[in-house]
Length: 103
Image (cartoon, rainbow, N blue to C red):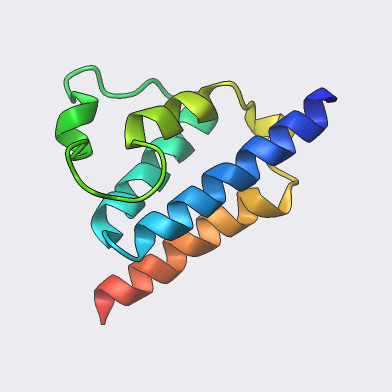
Protein backbone atom coordinates (compact mmCIF):
# COMPACT_ATOMS: atom_id res chain seq x y z
CA UNK A 1 0.00 0.00 0.00
CA UNK A 2 1.42 3.38 -0.93
CA UNK A 3 2.06 6.01 1.72
CA UNK A 4 -0.75 8.14 0.27
CA UNK A 5 -3.30 5.31 0.38
CA UNK A 6 -2.21 4.40 3.91
CA UNK A 7 -2.69 8.00 5.08
CA UNK A 8 -6.06 8.24 3.33
CA UNK A 9 -7.32 5.02 4.90
CA UNK A 10 -6.10 5.94 8.38
CA UNK A 11 -7.63 9.42 8.19
CA UNK A 12 -10.97 7.99 7.06
CA UNK A 13 -10.89 5.56 9.99
CA UNK A 14 -10.19 8.43 12.40
CA UNK A 15 -13.11 10.41 10.97
CA UNK A 16 -15.51 7.48 11.25
CA UNK A 17 -14.42 6.88 14.82
CA UNK A 18 -14.94 10.55 15.72
CA UNK A 19 -18.35 10.55 14.09
CA UNK A 20 -19.44 7.54 16.14
CA UNK A 21 -18.14 9.14 19.37
CA UNK A 22 -20.05 12.36 18.66
CA UNK A 23 -23.39 10.59 19.11
CA UNK A 24 -22.48 9.75 22.70
CA UNK A 25 -20.24 12.56 23.97
CA UNK A 26 -20.07 15.88 22.13
CA UNK A 27 -17.63 17.53 24.57
CA UNK A 28 -15.09 14.72 24.41
CA UNK A 29 -15.32 14.55 20.63
CA UNK A 30 -14.68 18.29 20.31
CA UNK A 31 -11.73 18.09 22.74
CA UNK A 32 -10.31 15.17 20.78
CA UNK A 33 -10.58 17.01 17.45
CA UNK A 34 -8.86 20.02 19.02
CA UNK A 35 -6.01 17.79 20.21
CA UNK A 36 -5.72 16.26 16.73
CA UNK A 37 -5.57 19.74 15.23
CA UNK A 38 -2.74 20.72 17.61
CA UNK A 39 -0.89 17.55 16.71
CA UNK A 40 -1.25 18.15 12.96
CA UNK A 41 -0.16 21.77 13.34
CA UNK A 42 3.02 20.57 15.00
CA UNK A 43 2.20 21.71 18.53
CA UNK A 44 3.23 19.49 21.39
CA UNK A 45 0.45 18.35 23.70
CA UNK A 46 0.28 20.00 27.09
CA UNK A 47 2.63 17.95 29.26
CA UNK A 48 0.64 18.80 32.38
CA UNK A 49 -2.53 17.17 31.07
CA UNK A 50 -2.66 13.40 31.35
CA UNK A 51 -4.58 11.79 28.47
CA UNK A 52 -6.78 9.86 30.91
CA UNK A 53 -7.81 13.10 32.58
CA UNK A 54 -8.52 14.97 29.36
CA UNK A 55 -10.39 12.03 27.88
CA UNK A 56 -12.28 9.70 30.17
CA UNK A 57 -10.67 6.44 29.03
CA UNK A 58 -13.06 4.50 31.26
CA UNK A 59 -16.03 5.73 29.23
CA UNK A 60 -18.04 3.46 27.02
CA UNK A 61 -17.49 5.49 23.85
CA UNK A 62 -17.48 3.35 20.73
CA UNK A 63 -14.36 2.69 18.71
CA UNK A 64 -10.77 3.18 19.71
CA UNK A 65 -9.79 4.90 22.92
CA UNK A 66 -8.97 8.59 22.61
CA UNK A 67 -5.31 7.86 23.34
CA UNK A 68 -5.22 5.26 20.57
CA UNK A 69 -6.76 7.72 18.11
CA UNK A 70 -4.12 10.32 18.92
CA UNK A 71 -1.41 7.70 18.43
CA UNK A 72 -2.92 6.76 15.05
CA UNK A 73 -2.90 10.42 14.04
CA UNK A 74 0.73 11.00 15.09
CA UNK A 75 2.09 9.35 11.96
CA UNK A 76 0.03 11.54 9.64
CA UNK A 77 1.72 14.73 8.51
CA UNK A 78 -0.49 17.75 7.89
CA UNK A 79 0.87 18.36 4.39
CA UNK A 80 0.18 14.72 3.59
CA UNK A 81 -3.50 14.79 4.57
CA UNK A 82 -4.80 18.35 4.36
CA UNK A 83 -6.17 17.89 0.84
CA UNK A 84 -8.05 14.67 1.66
CA UNK A 85 -11.85 14.84 2.07
CA UNK A 86 -11.78 13.21 5.53
CA UNK A 87 -9.47 15.99 6.79
CA UNK A 88 -12.07 18.62 5.90
CA UNK A 89 -14.88 16.42 7.23
CA UNK A 90 -13.22 16.20 10.66
CA UNK A 91 -13.26 19.98 11.03
CA UNK A 92 -16.77 20.24 9.59
CA UNK A 93 -17.84 17.74 12.25
CA UNK A 94 -16.30 19.95 14.93
CA UNK A 95 -18.10 23.01 13.55
CA UNK A 96 -21.44 21.18 13.60
CA UNK A 97 -20.78 20.02 17.18
CA UNK A 98 -20.04 23.63 18.21
CA UNK A 99 -23.39 24.65 16.68
CA UNK A 100 -25.11 21.80 18.53
CA UNK A 101 -23.56 22.93 21.84
CA UNK A 102 -24.72 26.51 21.34
CA UNK A 103 -28.36 25.53 20.95
